[in-house]
Length: 82
Image 1 (cartoon, rainbow, N blue to C red):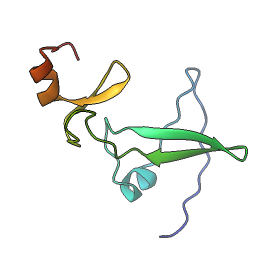
Image 2: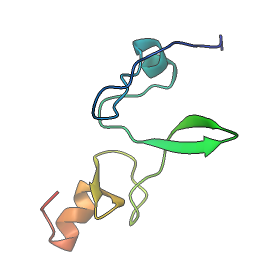
Image 3: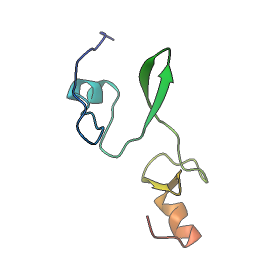
């Protein structure tokens, strides 16, 4: 893969817009999770490929009390407040 580099500004809320080329290269879609890590004075972003903490499913995930839970497990727990 060809190395990708770009410069982006950080907005007042601390957000950074990822360039489309980065999104495509990592197959990122709206709602996907990224892992942030500080390593050797640099911020590194990793595509988070974790699944549901209960069943391992990787689609239809929602952040629920700090954990990724699929919609089916939310239904099964009776906790529909996503």
